[in-house]
Image (cartoon, rainbow, N blue to C red):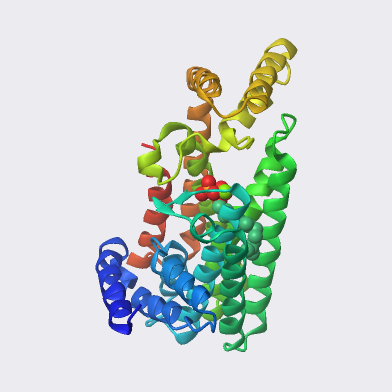
Length: 348
Ligand code: FPP
Ligand code: MG
């Protein structure tokens, strides 16, 4: 892509960033520029893929989280460390999605064909690896050991989370605690790193950094619970990927695990539910498995497990907001509270 096309891309996104995150839109445009500046792999195919992946970075949610937290901590302007660390978070996020699409054999993400679908597994894996390598390089320019440790932990947790998920696949004995542990690793850890690193960059007291981490963690859990529910209740067009995909992939998410947990003391109900889930797992994905999934969805709705998962998402969002009470009440803190509430408003 020609350089002026890159600029046009940046400007177009800046407009939507302005609407989405007015308080940090200028800073996010700098993050976008930083992301596009890494497009220098020698292999042409990799260069093309980087352009594709980075121009489809979606909402820059994680960079916005970091930048709003920095300003909620009193930073007047986003520093170079804020911008580059925000870019690192987005690079890691983009790499995990590229790898996740290989693991899920996914054809669509955000309504677009995945790199795995367009170029195959080998190139998708190498492209994700390249983004991770670029994230490490970026972090190394900041000369900040604690930031390196934070993002090294993130990488480790992401792999752990995905492995836990693999272990839990088609396992009807999975517990709520195991689900939470997986969700913490797979989703919440990167949110937590964004808010923690803003506190670290702006040299906040440890008690404040702990509160920022708690905000990021609860936001991440609320976000994932909402995502789990939307997989059941939304449609493929809105999701930009096939709906009801989790169950079809053998993944037990919040509403079902809550139902399994709640029926544990009623062995007849528990066995009946377990049998229905195992039956879905044993079928090829076709019309009859769709009917079984729809029937299970109806039960989950009628017996209140969708609502219970929604309540838990709301509780985590509220907990996230409460964690911020250690900060001064500024428009930046309010914007962070809005982010948490918005994550679950998607469920209204
Ligand atoms: C998307 O969520 C996936 C993740 C948040 C984590 C993916 C992690 C890996 C692939 C481990 C590899 C790690 C690194 C560091 C590259 P989802 O699967 O719940 O959502 P989806 O339905 O959109 O796929
Ligand atoms: Mg996935």
